[in-house]
Structure formats: structure tokens, C-alpha cells
Image (cartoon, rainbow, N blue to C red; front, side, top):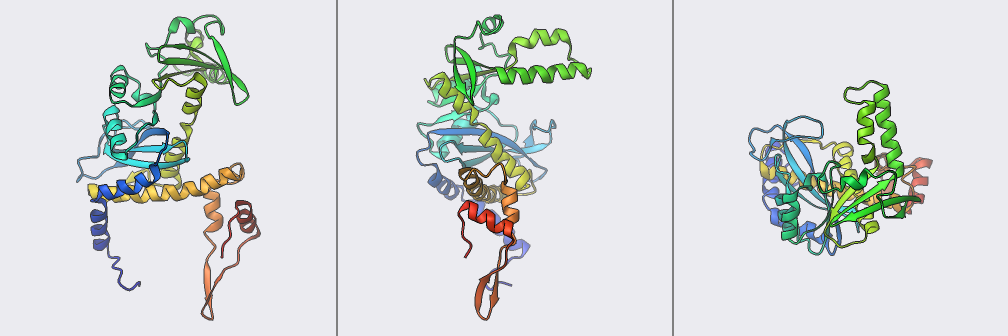
Length: 340
């Protein structure tokens, strides 16, 4: 028992409510990590919440395909520093640009380019973002009327103007206004193969006729942007979106926080902030593994598993680091870390 620390359930609940009630202080902490980040990847994810005592958990469509009560956790990830920098909780049925606008304002993000998801791709949202001075890169759904369908239907690559190299392969593109349409042949081949396999497996709705009807859209990525950037720069920005998917993967799988049992909005805020700190610590490991080019050999989970058995023992009033395995010592050496 630690002297002076009351760890009763009642005391912990009171702490959770008090701590989470000071959102201004939490935002001030997060702003210390924001700085002059120029490229912000923005997205939201649903967190299941069955509490009957909160009005913020609403019925909303989730990636699991259900309509269970949930909260929506909005996150901003810095492409420049490679780590999550800000979060905000909104009602589970709110996923529009109004949430984005308020989020950027609270976070103090200025002169940044927001890289959002397809959920923001609507005429109304583009208008609101333009009027709010938000610079953005947003992917369009392939049936969007903003895409020049006639050019896509042109035989082969004739409808595409020029190309640039990305990951040692050519990416063809054409522009029309604020929309740039890219063609990735490697993606096209993979999508064609996947579609044809479904035809072979007699999946409902997949036929040779539908394949031919959709074939001009395979391998296509259409991006709407008001940044004035060159096409290759816009494409590179969009490709960084995988970073925030990694953030949600850490949150829901590594930290196992895909649902919340909080019964109070202020406690929920504390829950989210603790998770945010945990994500920052995970990214310190992840970015170190990336820097040392060890991600092909070790995941964050692997690294934590190797390190969790390192501890100190007290012998004759001296604290001494315990034994560790050869594999753990090799990993510490590769990362340039010293346990003393």
C-alpha cells in the first residue's frame, strides 16, 4: 500500500471526473506537441459505448457494419513529426466538416494542410472548408460527378497526360480544376485480379459484364485539393494517410481500447487522454524502430514483450538491473538504448 494514495474505486472515479473536467488544460498539453506542423492527417474512428448515462454516445454506422451506440474519436496526426498530436471526442453520429472546423480551431492548427478521408468528399463540405480557409487533400469516391468520366473511358492511358515515379513505378494523371485523377497500374492489376476471382467464385453481383463496365475505374485514385500543390506532391501527401490508420490500429488492437465503459463524459475525457499518452509512448518506440530500419523484424508489441521482463532487484540496499535474454540485449543494442 502506497502511503498517501487512496486507490479505492470511489477515489479513482472522482479523480477521473475531476481530471477530465479540465479540457482546457488537456488541450494546452496537446498544443505543446502541435507546434508548426504543416501537414495534418485527420480522421475519426468509432468507439463502442453502451453507457446509458451519457448523451454523447449515439447510434452511428461503424466499420464493423453495425449501428451500435458509439462515440466518435477525432484524431490529428502530424506527417512531419510522425506521431498523433491531438484528439477530440464528438457524438457518435457526427462525422462532418463542422467537427473538423471546430477541431482545427481548438487545436490551434493554422497554415496546415488537412489530409482527410472520403467521408469529407461532398460539395457542401468542400464549400465549407474553402470558406473556412482550410486547405485540404480529400479522396473522391469513384462514382463522384467531380471526376471526368469521359477521360477515364478513353482507351488505355490516352486520357492521362503525364506521369511521375512513385515507389519505382509510374503514376499517370490528369487534372481538371481542383481534381487530379491518378492511375496506378499495379493497383489496377490487383483490383482486376480480385474482381475476377469473385466472378470465379460466383459471388453475387460480380459478372463479366459488370467487370467490363467498371474496368476503366480500376487503379484510379481521384483527389480533390485546394492547396495549389503539384500532382506528385498531392499524391505523396495522400499516401501518408496510412499513418493514422496505424494510430487507430495501435489504439484498438495493441492497447485494446476499441470500446469504452465510462459512465460520465468527464471520465470519458480522462480515458481518452490516458490513451493519448499511451499512443505517444507507443510512437516513441515505433519511430525508433522505423529510424533504425527494424520494423521488418520487430513490431511495437514485440518490443514491449522483450522489455517487459526487465526490472530491478534490491540487494544489500543497492538496486540492480535483473538478468535479460540475449535477444533482449541484442534488440537494446540495435536501438541504441541502455538500461541502467
